[in-house]
Length: 171
Image (cartoon, rainbow, N blue to C red; front, top):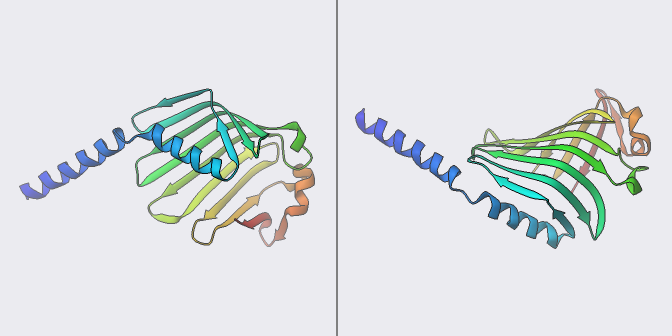
């Protein structure tokens, strides 16, 4: 019994040390480099690294050199078996206002080892509330919307199902 306690304590200590000393900022720069290969650039004003988190302030997103959006704050939190990303105050560029809502208050993405192939998302903004999933194996995004009337031009992209309006795409 004593041996099991020591092994469990060692594993717990190893797990905490792995998370605390994980090079979170370098992982972010690797992600930034991978996105740059796809034509997406992310410029941030400030990066701060915590024990279990990485926070970005004043983020500007460009796609193929065109400014797409500015984001007030991005907070990433991980315990390795559970990861969450919270994006706050997204302001989409005015040039895209006819196609997408210009203000998104928050987007929350969560991934758990209990469902390793699925990322859950929830969002709130000018369009109301949205909840959905991203299937990593099938490369499919499904988003349910509660009030599609506020979407304007995007409503043409939605499909009406038994439970309401939804958007679905593959990447």
